[in-house]
Image 1 (cartoon, rainbow, N blue to C red):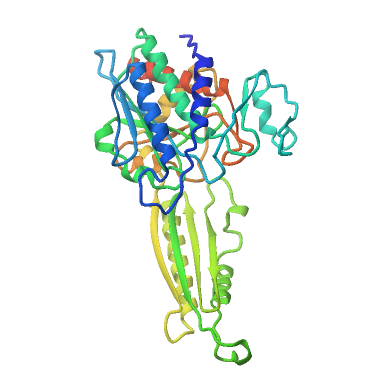
Image 2 (tube, helix red, strand yellow):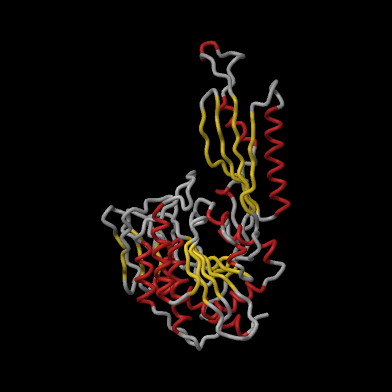
Length: 415
């Protein structure tokens, strides 16, 4: 089946979404954490209703927009969901001005603030030669992560609604807040969404599938020092900053992100604030393998115990909590969502590429809420900064892939 996605409309949608400041902020007690996310959510509610989707609504309790595309076949068919996030990362997102570069030829793109996009610095730009490239203006992020995913999802709905001859099962759409700060999926209504499986559309080259994520924990360490005048410090002062450095030095030197890739885990010192009297260190702990993950956490606590041993009372205190787990441990039990994604990608003329995702997605949490949710590509590069780019054609491939997946799923031709 040949699929012709309406690329001009998709591009217009993306630019419209990109112009809404949806940067999220941690530590806020509202959901979403920022009002711009609600602005985009309401825009999507109106658009999805106009398209003709059913049960369109914005849940004020969790900030998710959801909508339903009913099945148009009587054949028993698995249902699946398509999920993307509303928010953008911690980089300037005020007054985003998308720039469109038709028939991109690889020549440097110079911004007024002195920054430039060049193939020499970003070789991945080569994949966009001959396509319609979209960038920011060098002063903000563009919002490819994840507004390209939103645009691809909406284009999928638009195509399926306009082409009832394409048979498909029930498909649900979900657009949620605060993915970038790791809190949005905590309130996801998996029971209400109720699909057999789902996909997030978040990062990745065209054709890419990611279903292995880290197991993740965060440890906050508080250190009690003893502050006295340095002139009288001998045998009295205990410098909390020094103890913090000792803790970091006691962890394996090469088990850090800058020395790891693939399936390798790490310890990362995320924050270090301190004075002589007290200090706080925040670590994140990551590993793909659950046993190694548990061993890393145990090693960290053992190190704390050893550092506390010389003192008459504990100077180091730790609060540790798990953040999310590797979705592969569940998805491997029934790989049908992966096989379907591979078949859809091939039908769209691409080669499937399955790689471990060195992070977590909303799908990490949604999977453990009962809906297996691997990640599919969004088509862009250079996320979270002024060099973000995507092409209209790459976003079109998201929709093309999903339409093929819908048809293949209904046909029952994928094992």
